[in-house]
View 1: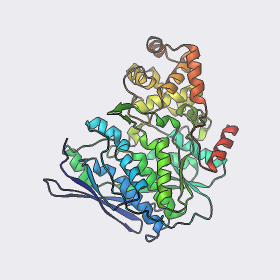
View 2 (view 1 turned 90 degrees about the horizontal axis):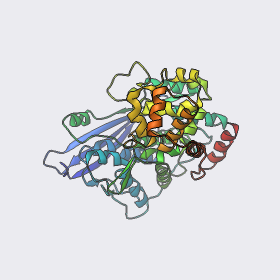
View 3 (view 1 turned 45 degrees about the vertical axis):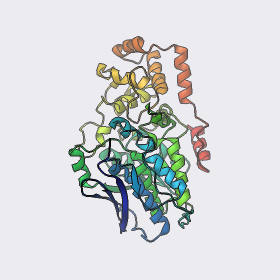
View 4 (view 1 turned 30 degrees about the horizontal axis):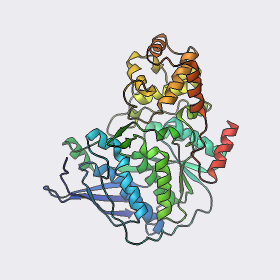
Length: 447
């Protein structure tokens, strides 16, 4: 498909007080050029930043390039125009706009390979001056679900001062942040209304690597306000993709992957002196192992939701915190259930999502006997099979679900035990930065 425009341009950005305006435009088409302005408002709970600080300006550049994915996808031209950046940084943006948007290209029938090439600088660019904060304190990314509250507890155990951060907010994000007992900093995001008008007229639309946008927004706040680290709660399960397309792995969770984590941390280090450390404190764990830790914290059991219907733009918030039918609801119930008694499951979910026959097709996709792994933030088929097999072996599945399991999965008990052991292991191939590895290890020894 040929683009309606030849070039996507990163025009400029402007920081006035707490308001950061990110500007983009499409040029070189049969239609008149098309300009956009996105507005990010830094948290009102923090001091107004110094707009002249070199590190802050470098962090704003990172946000400018990252948030552009939401506008670039409307037409996906092959050419991008921007101020040249160091080669390593340009390679990061090339990957973000190709593999990082893999699901979008897959769903729209576009080839993700080599979509764009960002302009490279001819000479190395000096890193922006930045002094590391005098005291250690972290921003914990909070999304309203089980993982971020466990990350907060790892920091509590390590006695690391922290606050919560979210890009935008929703009732369940606010509720879980309150349960954490920390200040909650919210960055307000306002997308250009012209983007929604284009979508309504049939412009290309779909999934973007939103976790990359959250990382860039948090890094900006951390630089502006003296935080030494940005702590995510992504797990190793996020590394496993959904499918392959034109030789490229398509991963709904690409911007939650270990590869993204490492490359984003390297990007910040390339452009900023002593930048805040970006890491996921739960990276060596699977979703199944994190679920076990979550069940040990009763203060969060009525304060979280992972149903994506609670976090959609321009849609009313559902009355119930779980729809009980989407892949995310079925998955979260599946991995929590083996670690929880009936009372806890009732408090968290209110119903048995596995007992609904209408969810069996979703269950098949989750455990790897159906079609494709759902395009949601869900765990691997191995850990899903392990969880379902453990529930079957202990007689905790509803009769209809047990019958479905027997007919469609029927794993050997030894295989179930082996899968469970693998899923619950702490992987040693995901090292955390110093001193976070020691803190993570100490937490696990205590739990």
